[in-house]
Image: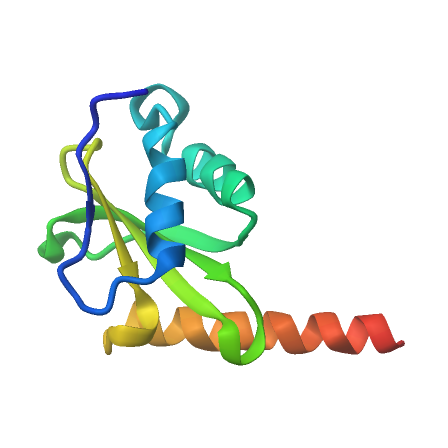
Amino acid sequence: MTDQSLDIAAKLPVTLEAVELELALQMQDIVSRGFEDSVQDAVEAAGYKFLFQFPAASENGRQRVAAVSAGEGDDRHILLVHLGEDGETLQVETANDNADSIANFAVSYAGLMEALGRSAASA
């Protein structure tokens, strides 16, 4: 285990999926492996789907953000993993409870990917 700081956002309710992802992230070494690889490994260990990651707006004190889909349809939860400016601090947040543009994009993107997956499976 690493000594990076990991924190679930103070938003309620905290989902089981967010807690599972946080636990999987605690097993990763963000500093040596990098943010994207660490998040992808944690997502795979938790049985979720990695959606995307990209640089975050610097004014919010975060370097990067990744989006994760846990579940499908009405049971789907979209989680955001934020990397702090220090390169070690992670924060897990439920996108469904957040109104910012990244959260809205993540929810829409997950819905699109799910619809495309159903379309491809029926073809």
